[in-house]
Length: 478
Image 1 (cartoon, rainbow, N blue to C red):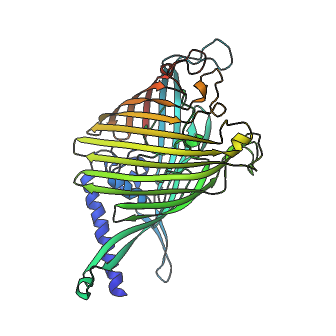
Image 2: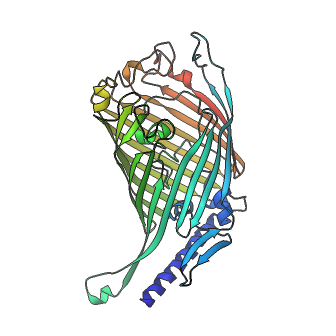
Image 3: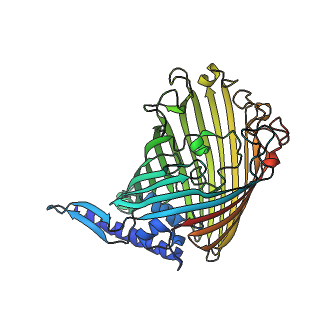
């Protein structure tokens, strides 16, 4: 037992040294990202290409529970030498501020006066302001917790939150059939973790999923298409309206597998949840994630799949009982990264297929069909020079079943043409980072199709291109 423990202890020391070596490859002399930087003493280039996109080391840091530290610790130890407390002497706190300007190609109709128009161009100061606790809670236990003020909604509440426990294990086994061959020991590492979070995909370390996918920021006041899959809808879908717990394994820093379960966790309104709430999850929703990452030299490539199956009661005046709408989302994704001394390149792609069984909506005349589908495809290429000047170009498309009740033509900006959910377009973005924790961003979103059509989609003469959006952002982390 002592020898096995010694081997395992030595392996952990080697692993730790390896992590520090990888870190050294990505360190720069720039100032560090706030919360995790204060805890680790690492420059933000260790964990991020251009924030919030993660590097391979950043993914390892997240999977390991956010616990790597370089701060003086407050310790608690029993008489039996069992450690009962390992707390950072200073809390890893930080603040995020976003100030933005939004301009649409054609002013939006006034929401209260027929024939009038809304103000053409809007500044949000702030668009968002967040306070983070992001770092170690105890040995093997850490958290990323975000409290956000939304300037457009004038509301302060919990944002993306991920609390996780993670621990490494050394796996040993014999190779070959003979006793001599079996004496040759093979060693594999396995990281086992548990995550408690409020948004499916917020726990994911790759930047192909909804919570941390491109675009990393966008206007909160510009018009947006009605139709999106449940797993890709953020707070308008399952995200931040749910709470889940799950377990994951990370084998040999290459193979990833996760299984989680989510349930309804809406904030505000009536509690216990009742018919005054809308889109309430029914029962448990299983979420799964599988993937493989291969790393070589300064490159990494990931291919994976993920998905969720959930039941939802429409609510909004309807009792939270009886028939249920069921959504099954299955996705495939790929990510490639090159991280050089001067040049950084990332390619992201995601495809999501959603099956909808709309028993509750059909029974209550909210949908014309008992079954519908949605399909979303997104692809993005990002480039940065010296983590200072860069940009991105992305394309997106959503197609699916036409449903006149689910996607009604209401004669307004939010109306759909012929009950079609289709939308498509592109996002072009330029970024300038004078410091690694300060981003100045110019983004343009162009639509070739919006809510089902390119021209007169709303029935009042508004075209898809009228919703093209210019977005300016100042994004500070400190």
